[in-house]
Length: 353
Image 1 (cartoon, one colour):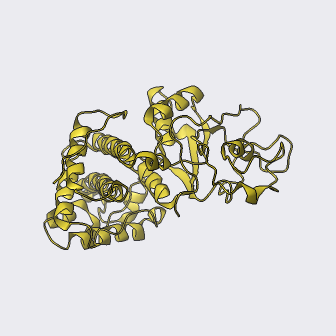
Image 2: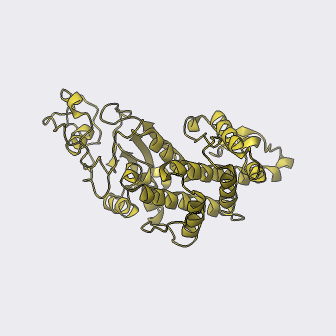
Image 3: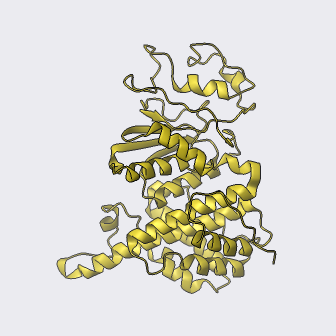
């Protein structure tokens, strides 16, 4: 077994999360980091929704005499908690971790959760049964994830799992090198952008949102300044399908309600009628393969056609057509335009679909 690598440079606590990462990384063995991240992050997400479910389940059991039904899915949906069917509950998976069929059981759990929670359809990884994934190591990984926030109150457990997910995203991005920039913007860059714009209320939009770090940071900013999380609405788009899935899980694990669409913002704008108050974005950094030549007659280029060889020059006009045009204005007139220059490592908006 190779030794685990240590990496730094995240905004999470470097103690518990770092030790957890070292153990999980050691279990990776020779699996590629790009593949392994979906194995680990999928399990952390499953643990999160199961913990939230179990906390509500215990609450409903305590109210059984008052007519509460702990097996009524609507009780959970009314509280914005994912319904977890019996075969997908973490206690069942942990008890089955030593079994050679554990990969199939995890896949079945993911399928059942998507079946009963339409907002997660097509989001969760479902390839744990594949022959290339060592089932003994998978069982060990389940045992490792089982100990995250074990015995902690529901609110603290949610925060801990959220921090672990965020920390692991950063570590996987570091392990993947340049490709990691497709799904992760360094936390210090995100924090600066959010502090500069201070999005206290209104509609917040990221046209190339990666794994959703801008939105998580915006929520943290509001909490830190005693604001109300319900004062902002979140919209985003991501062209890389696997990264879109990471974003959906990242936001769900934080309890953030968001409209995140899959598609290329340049060629398939999924929020054409959105009038956003704030745009937080780490745009496609000097991307030369954005197929700009296909958009030379696009009505968004009212001030001139951007060069096909550099996507940076296309993002601003695409988001902010001139006032008075019939094109759906992306920003409300009372707000300033805030499209940040690409800082740090950018994402390829094309990615692999």
